[in-house]
Amino acid sequence: MSAASPNLIQSLRHDEIVNCMRCGFCLTACPTYKLSGHEPKSPRGRIALARAVAEGQLTLADITAPLDQCIGCRACETACPAGVHYGEILEAARATIVKHKEQSAGERFIRQVGLRWIMGTPTGIRLGAFGIWFWQATGLSWLARKTGLVKAVAGQAMAEMEAALPKAPSPIKRYMGGGSGHVFPAKGERRARVGYFTGCIQEMVFWQENRDAIALLQAVGCEVHIVPGQGCCGAVHAHTGEEHTGHEQAKRNIGAFERFEIDYVVNAAGGCGAALKEYRLWLSREPQWAQRAEKFSRSVRDVSEILLALGPVPMGPRPGRVTLQDSCHMRNVQKLVSEPRKLLAQVPGLEFVEIGNADSCCGAGGVYNVVQPETANLIGKDKASRVKATGARSLVVTNPPCQLHMRASLMRAGMDKEGVEVIHIATLLRQSMDAVVRPSDK
Ligand code: SF4
Ligand code: SF4
Image 1 (cartoon, rainbow, N blue to C red):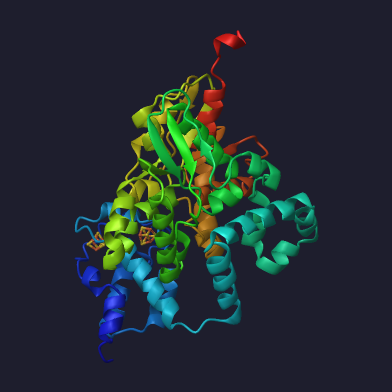
Image 2 (spheres, rainbow, N blue to C red; image 1 turned 90 degrees about the horizontal axis):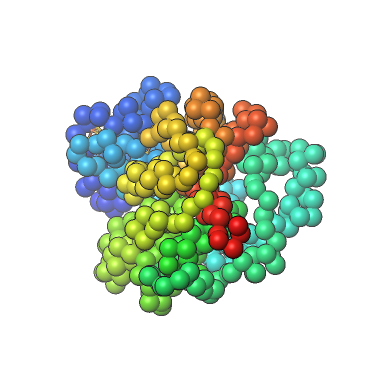
């Protein structure tokens, strides 16, 4: 076979690929390798496959399936002694595959409507949020479940995800709860001015969790701005080979937040936070954006970082045994491991039990559970049994895809009927904050 073109070599990030010294230290960190035992389903194997394409020994079609099967959890990066940026290699390879692949009409439709129109614009996100509320409030969701319509049209995995959706707030509740442009004042003396990054899935599906995080930020002295003009972080686009749309999201968000004088950009979604912190890498090759992206990324904080820096949050009793499923991108990319644990340790009456395999992905992987449901559900099943083994009544999460995927996984295991809940850390901390007995309550 002839060598690949210089453009293909560059777009596959051959310069990064060659840093892999094939030692294999990453293998045992990889959930898909642990499940299969197959080298092409390992980080080392996937890097070798991308290298083979760049060096003209394989075609992009040969490596599409093994790369599609990667969750993108980036646990391999934390195990790599050579500091290989696997995430960059994966995203570059997926973007190259999407660019060169003949797409079916269905795939083109999903990419155009779902990724570019709905998740790719602020208006689309608002429409998506309205659509979910309308679907549930009018009984369409109930009817579709009863008749098996969701399963028939979108498959078993989507039907289970749909069933796991929490009840969406009405448009009036959203409006009253503070939408785009709203400013939430600090409680007491203002100690920081923050721009809150609402996200797409987080704001569409887990709106209340965002408001819980904002209430906590207010309690530690933050004035919180819901910066208008912001959209999706672009992670879902980067993970699905839509590199251009992902970078467009980054530019929109940087432009929107730059218009405000703020100390930090704060979010409560591990995956979004990782993407926002990586804008500096995404746009490093675009001279007119590199500096702006660097400045933006340096200002990004997960809500847990701010609560620890400016707290403590006043907390009342919130009894119960809980365990925590780390968000991979919060743990492996943002390197925030102790932060959620320290916050949970501050809650009076709470018993925290570490889950087995805490450093391993739950299988959600952004949209991995939709495109690779078999593997995602196997991993989710294992996680559910590990939650059960802890005896916890609450599984605490820090990222919306994990929240939805673990809700579906616990439902599949019948654990929701046993009273085991999946709860965002901001909601749990707010419950504790709301339980503070004020002198006027006595
Ligand atoms: S990102 Fe996760 S699933 Fe993919 S190769 Fe790395 S460890 Fe394995
Ligand atoms: S640990 Fe790093 S250098 Fe070693 S095989 Fe994995 S990616 Fe390559």
